[in-house]
Structure formats: C-alpha cells, structure tokens
Amino acid sequence: MRIAVSGVLLGSLMWASLSMAGSSQHLLMPDAVKVIESDEQGSLFVNAGGFTLYTYPGDDQPNASNCNDKQYHQVLGQGQNPTFLPDPETRPTCEQAWPPLRAESDASPVGDWSVFERHDGTFQWSYKGKPVYTSMYDKSPGDMTSNRGFLARNPLFAPPDVPASMSARITRSGYVLTGSDGMTLYSGVDDTDPCKDACGREWRPFHAPAMIRLDDADTPWSIEVQADGSRQWARNGKLLYTYGKDRAPGDLQGSAEQGWTPVILSPRLSPPDDISVQMTTEGEVFADKNGMTIYVWNCIDESPDRLPCDTPDAPQVYRTSICGAGETCMNTWRPVVASPGSTAVGTTWTVIPVDPTGAHQYAPADPDVTPLMVWAYQGKPVYTYAGDEEPGDLWGHKIRSFVLWGYSMIKRDLSDY
Image 1 (cartoon, rainbow, N blue to C red):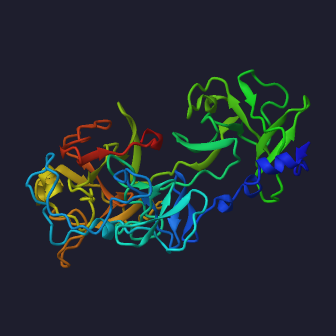
Image 2 (cartoon, rainbow, N blue to C red):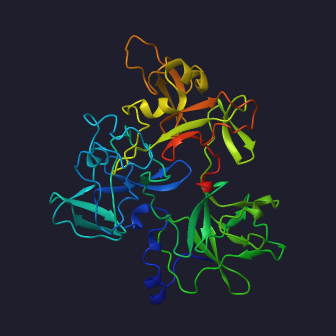
Image 3 (tube, rainbow, N blue to C red):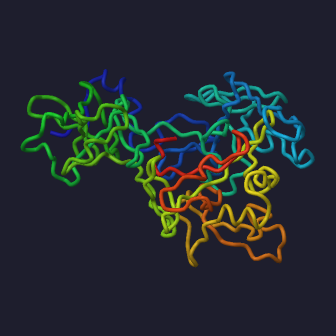
C-alpha cells in the first residue's frame, strides 16, 4: 500500500517542509536569491540574474565582511617577491572583485538568511552568518570560476531538496542520495524490486518515520507499507535501501551488486571527446585524448584580500615566474587544443581563446594575433606538461613558486576535494 496522505496532526507538524519535496520552493530564501542545478554538484544558490553566489574563508566573524573598498598595494610578506603588488594601479578592490549581495535596509531575515550592515552603511545578505558575494570574474549565469581550495572563494551550495531523513553528497558516481547519516541509498536498476522475492541480509529497507504527511501530488517521494507493517521510503516508485557493507559516508560497495544502483541525483558529467580519464597513483584524473595528464593554473595573490591572479586580466608575472615567458611557457605547458566544431559540455567544459605566443594566458592582447581555441575547465585553460613522459605521469602536479600559485592536476572524483 502506498501512502499519499496521512491525517495525523503530528505528522503534519514534523513534515511541513516535505509537502514541497521535489522542488526548491521549500527553501526559505530572499527574493534576491534562487536555486539552480550545477554540473555534478547539486543545487547552487545564485542571484536573481543566475550568477553564482560565494562565501569567503577570510570572513572569520559571523555577519561581518572583511571584503571592503580598500586599495591594497603591498603583499603580506609571507613569500611573495617583490614587496609590492605588480598591478597596484589597476587592481580592483575586494568589493569590486567580489560584489556583496546587497540587501535593503529594511530587509527581514528569512530562513538561514540574515542581513548585516557593512563598513559603508549599506546592507548585505549573509547565509548562516557567512557574508555572501557574487564574482566579477563570472561572465555568464552558472559560471563557477572560483571553486573551492585554499583561501579561494567557495560557491554557495544549497541543501539538497530531499526529505528531512535524507541528504546527498558528492561521490565517485556523482551527486548521490544518502540517509541523514551520509550512507548511500540504493534502488533497483529497473522497475523490479531486487528484494521482492528474496534479499540478502546486507540490504536494509530505508524506513520512513511513523507519522508523516505527503500531500504534494508532484513529489517523487512515497511510502510503502510492508507486510510486517513497516513503512519504507520510495523515490519515483522505487523502494530505497542501505547496504550493510558500506562502512563510511559516501561508500558505494552496493553498486557492484547485480541489479542495484545508487540513487543518483546528478550524474557525473561526461567530458568532451578531446578529454579522457586516466588512472594514476592519485586516482582517476582528466587527461588529453592520448592519456597525458592535464593541469590548470591556479593563483591567489598574497594581498590581505586574497584576489585571484589566474583571471584574464591578471598580471602575467605570477605565471611567468613558473613557466617562463612566451615560447618557453608554451613549450612547457601545452594548451589542449579543441577539435574543430567542439562545443561546451555543461558549464564545466568550455572552449576559449588563448594567446599562441604565450605572452598572455588567455586571449591575445594584439587583435592581429589569431588565438588558439583550447579546452577550459571551469573557465581555466587546461594544459599538458612537457615533463610527463607517458600516460599516468603526474610530474606537473603542484609545480609552484609559492603555496598560493602553481599548476594542479584535475581529479575526476569531485568527492576528493
């Protein structure tokens, strides 16, 4: 028997938010915020225009922003040389680079969102006490050009739109449904319940609370009452189970069992035809079509506001300190050229222009120079490294001048980050 409605008052109190399950509408948000689905990583908070929202690790006090209008000229002195930033005249302030998500002075808190007053008397939204920003480096809705890392701005992901007894997490199979304890939830690969006739003791029905109301006709969630009177969750008509051999959150041991699959909310993105996946000593990494590991250049400068120095307008001194100038850099770090007719894959893999002379990382400054059209991962060009001799080599990983800038491989499994 599948339960659509329960008239128990306690159930309605427990599950007021679940009546909206299957959409992001149950999340309480300001009008200035909405939710979209990202590639592989679940729901993402964006502003009204669809641009990614971020938080900043440097904001170390609740509802207080350390990102202001101060113009910095000197570095912190922890390793960078020379003493002064290379672009003091053109370098944006922190709040120009990371515009605050502004709020009206009379805006009221809603859900996990609150409002605080900035240094200049204007008001900004915060999420769970963390000030929220957009990015001047994102050029199109859905861009995510700052994506985690040491001192990097972090995209603001929304809680998964699932019942309160469930959650979701990034795994090697994609963004997967879990219990609230992080343990993977499974269902049958087709419409037949693998446990209909007999089921190994390792497969355990995922039970629903005793009192609940599901009154949203469009919800993918339902509850089935079993012969012993227990109530089991189902999604899209498929009963949900945990697997006893999964020992830690994110384990996927049950995916090797015939007839079973983890419940994948967002599947892993297939890379472009020019990009392959190569097994290495560090696990699966992205590679070119010949299996040679690919890398991205990451850079955060040593100013107090930690602005990125791997963007199209960034000074080239950071990059050339690693790979040399011009032709030397191009011969060492070789952009992965896109095949003619290649198109973007989601917002993760795009084709962008770079300077074939190596003078600039992105499009050439000289309009008479024909750019190379190369693959980019989350907005950044990808490269192979001249020091790698065969597929699986990782000699280019973490070649850097200082802890805040250098080259890194791109791991296939996002749960490793």
